[in-house]
Length: 190
Image 1: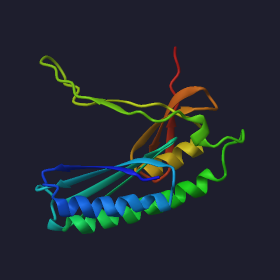
Image 2: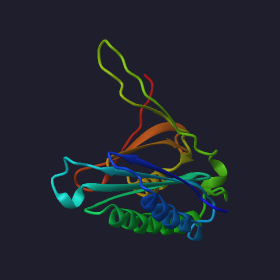
Image 3: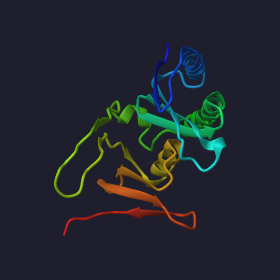
Image 4: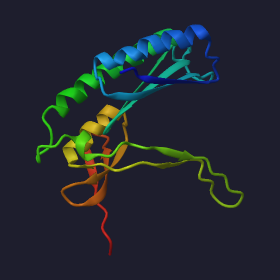
């Protein structure tokens, strides 16, 4: 099965050479994880970066049934940034495969429990008051706190992660504290 690769450029022209290079490299990811549905590669040139070595940015997002993996790397050359992001996503795939093989307590894997992720983004603009610049909708997969920590790491989220806690049947927010430990916000209705 071939991976569908979408390449987007922001402040950078995606030439045929870049397109061919990225497509060739990213389609090889199905060797590591054969059930990848699609891969999105965002390439950017950030002129305002402090260091010239951080101006070329490559972000790779891999989606499959029940998982989303993401990596981002910066370099002084776009090809170097893509290679570094690919190495990082390969490490995340290996980590995901290791965690997935243990399965859930009920014998089902997370991929069997979660419906296919469908992320929708809508751009909104208002004229009065605060502006909501971006709105995201995504399905919440039932998981426990430890699975949420793993998913947070696999996605590359460093600050927080929202998930549906299977133990408490409520939406929780997991966040990383300054000392490196994690905190859990469990809202309740009064």
